[in-house]
Image 1: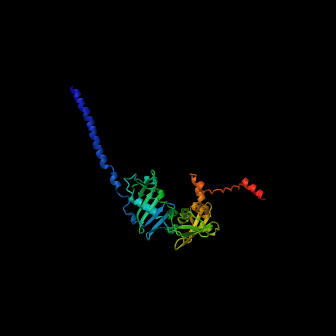
Image 2 (image 1 turned 135 degrees about the horizontal axis):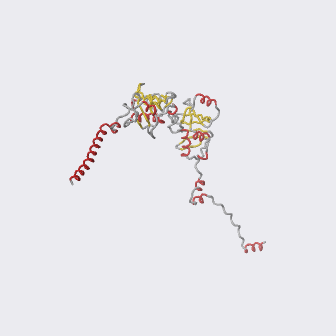
Image 3 (image 1 turned 60 degrees about the vertical axis):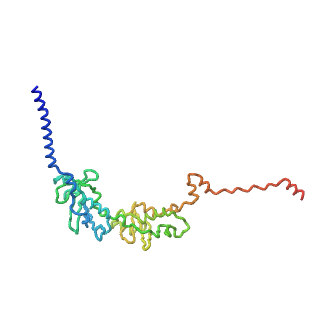
Length: 346
């Protein structure tokens, strides 16, 4: 019995000692393990997004310089307005990033993840008054929506929420796509074979005022010109070819105090447009260009009452809209008495 009791005590003592050792090991690990919450509350870049007035983006082969002047961003290489929302999104995302802890810290890892000074996917220079506030190297992606990032002069390679396509190195990709957009209400639009005027809240054809137009449908067509979006910019060689070309068509859009004159030119399967207040040829979508070059008047007219009635699925309106066929009058019937009287008289 004594041996049994002693064995029982030992069997209880061993698990207890193991438990104590596990607790102690846990305390040691907790003491030295990086605090993800504390690290995650520390901004990756130590300045405000509003401080940045220049952005330089490079992929090692080409670069784009973006400048903030008079509260508007410009693509320096093109001397044209930049997409301000796109720029602000990049700056805000990088400045607000709070990564938890480094994914790696070695030079070998920097090369492998493409965040090294001589091997990167993107290099982004964030400047204030010509001075670097930070230089960031962006590399490969561990998974969707994440990218490896490293600040210049820092060995820590962080996992941040970003995508390389958000920071393209090609200047054309930073263009303000709406730079040809007209915000005011058009008062007159001229297209091939169609002159439109906006009078007293309605669209009408200038030389055919009796034609009844469907305002929403005309608005759709006019908006293709009014809100023409830019895809890219023609290079000098292509621009010279477009200047000499006789193909294409012209269009005019007038607002209350200004008229905009457009030239559209095809090049292969693409369309380019130039407006009189800008000398550049811009690549535009083929869809609006094809609609504007040959507008279909039949799609702009209001539906005739008879056609509208015929489209009624009830059948009642169709019958009502169909004109009645006149029924010929029946021949007069001569009574026998009147005929006899006639013969008697004769």
